[in-house]
Structures are given as structure tokens and as C-alpha cells.
Length: 279
Ligand SMILES: [Zn+2]
Image (cartoon, rainbow, N blue to C red; front, side, top):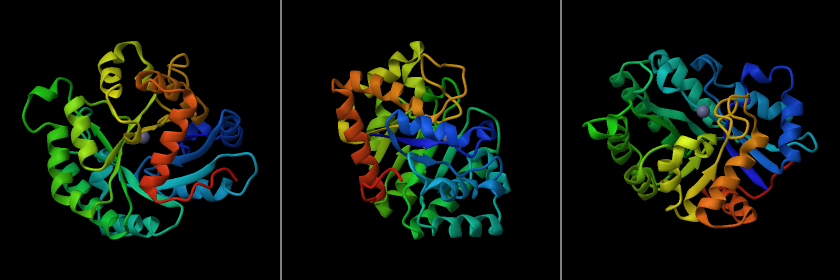
């Protein structure tokens, strides 16, 4: 059994076949999916929870969990009512995580100070609700060498505002270097790998992944984006988390069953869930 720890099941691209897509995931051995509640805009962040409630309880589908959060580029939409909505969503039992939140200096969306302030305000809400966080961090190309890049800013904020909570989280679609991986593990985070791990040019990322402990990793699709090889370029879906898991297993020198067991155990440990999957 595998868990897809990050998929956008609320995407319009599943409007016509969402139930069939989830059935394919179940057939492929995906027992649970964490669906991300960021919406297109912050106003749509409850859609993930709605989808959980629509499908949980139906036979032969993965168990669904939801998150809620305000994506870095939507942090300009933050005001008191949006934060109150986030707070109330995080109180729901299906909403096990706050995210994806973080910093994105790659695409020029919200100004960096607005992103940082928006992240900090959400960390306060997640801490009060005792929900682990899902971090999106994307550096500008070639930024690693410069000072105060996205990762530096992220770690500075997490050290000050998140480490003391002890709640941990997930570095979603991890694509950083070894130093960033080490710092994330030290903060109690799991590193989640998406389909880009399978891309030919991703050898540096595979080299980082190969050094990680089995109790520090997750797998995800980030569907509908980032379809793994051999489906690259197509609409992604949770069934294809298998391809990423196979590559990660090879890098860590374990069998497919071991990577499935380890990532599932890691997921349940982080979110304090009982191991009851499926419907
Ligand atoms: Zn995502």
C-alpha cells in the first residue's frame, strides 16, 4: 500500500473523471491520498475538504485526507476573514495539515516580504491547531550561491516560528540540495519526492535522495502536475505515485514493498493517524 502525500484532487482537470481516477489509484495500490486545499485562490481552499467528504465512505477508493492553506502567490489575498476561514478548516478532523504554504522566489507572484509575512501568520494558526505543515519552497534559478535566497529565508522563519512547536511537516516536492535536506530533517520534516525524481536531468536530486534515511521520506504525485516518467507531460494522477516510489526504492536499495511500508509509516507517524486506510 502506498500513500500519495500530495495531490490536487480539486483540479478542474479531474472534473469529468474524478471517481474513475480515484478508482485507478486504488487499483494501483494507493491506499490514501492527501489532497491539497489551496484552491485557485484562497477563497477556494475548502474544496479539498469537500472532496474528502464526497468520496470517503465509498468502497474501493483510497482514503482521502485534506489540507488547507494559502499558497505563496496568493498571500496578497490574506486578510482577517481568510485567516479565520483557514483556522476553522484546520479544526476539521479530515484536515490534517496546513499547506501548501511557503516561499516561491522562482515565479514572480507576491512580493517576497508579503510571502514571508503570510507564511508566518499561517504558522501561528497551524501551531494553535497543532497541524503539521506542508512546505512549498522554490528558489530562483542559481540562487543557492547568493545570500538570503528562498531556502535561507525559509529556514530562518521555521527556526524562529516552527521548531519550538515540535509539530514538524513535509518538504513537498523536495528538490533542494543535501544541505537543505539535512536542515529539513533536523527540523523534524519529512522529504517528499514527486515525479521529477524520475526525470533524466534530476541526477543531483537522486544523489541527495540516495543518502536519506528510510524514516525521512514520503512519495507524492503533485497531480495533476509533474507526471513521472514514462508519463511525463500528461495529466498526472495518484495511481502514478508508484513510478516515483519504484525509483526511490532503487536509490535507497530496498524493495518496493519496503518503500511502501516505510513511507506509509512515516505519513501516519507525522500526522498521528491510525493505520486505517481505504474505505
Ligand atoms: Zn502542490
